[in-house]
Amino acid sequence: MLLAGIAGCGGGSNTADPGPDPEPVIESRTVDLLDYVGDSIRYVQTFSEGYFVPTVSEADQFSSVVVSLMNQDLQNALFAAGNIGLRLLRIIDTGAGNNELYCLEEVALRGQGFYCVDFDSSSTHHISAPHPLFDSRTNTESVTVMRGTGARFLSVSTTHRCSNGATSSCSGTTSVCGETGAYKVSDAAHSVDSFFYHFGKTVHDRSASTHTIQLHGCGSSACPSNNDNADIVARLSAGTTDDLPATELVNVLNAELNEELSPLQQGSSVSCSEPSEDKRLCGTTNTLGRYINGQADPCENSASVFADSRWLHIEQNANIRRDDGAGDSVTPNTLVNAINDLFESL
Image 1 (cartoon, helix red, strand yellow):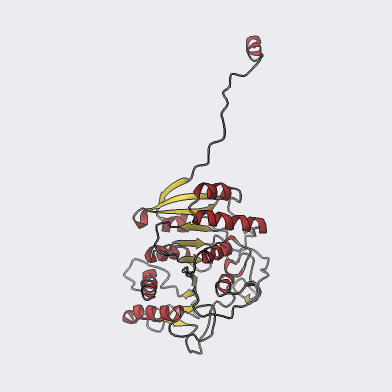
Image 2 (tube, one colour):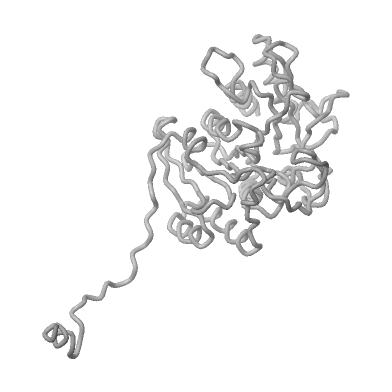
């Protein structure tokens, strides 16, 4: 003990200077992205109060992270993401020929979402799933649609739309969480204070060629799913009930989807922007849709201009959201084919 004490005295330390901290390293994961989104990502559950509304500063920082990621400034994105509780992952998607993606994932479960960018994509399109639990299978379906259409961007909310009791300040009402009232702060499609909204806004602003396709689930009363020709397989909108020209994307996609469905004899698709008395679930209070359609205050006010809209809001019956592997002819790939035909026609 005495010798050890003497050895520790003197005019200096024998410990080498470690130098500056090494730069953080991007973690790589080799996974099937569809399984990862379905089984590995954690989601805030209904009525759990587990969703955390980001501060204005956090939302601004997140938007900056997204810009860095889109610019392929990976080290800056990695460092800045860590400051707001996110990690940047390099994902090798084994379900898509080992396609490489860069994805933002939250470290602790707060319902902040999951976001991916495919730098090799030749498109600028964005596939979005705001209600991964309430609208069952839309989280995994979004991966199928991203892969099948070659979309560049993917956003998946990681909170149930009814997880929190506090209400959103944005306009519109719903009864999906119980009594009819304002949307909840945890509803990613009806808030402007979420990372999910800011990702969609930042992606949209990046390029005039970006189209956002948001996937929703529609219940059996509005979208029957009996595997017969009376089914309403999808209800499509550009965020309005206004009748629009046949050349608008929403009506072109409706025609393409019906062309896919017609020989299958398992239902049809309808558009909120074609003459009809049956205009339901048209997404008029969706905040990202309002923003994309030019509304400067999408929380409080509806959009009013829909010409050349780059917003596609898709409500789907239970059949098209799943591929049960049992020979069912209406699957997410039915929608993929219609979307591909849509963009090939532009």
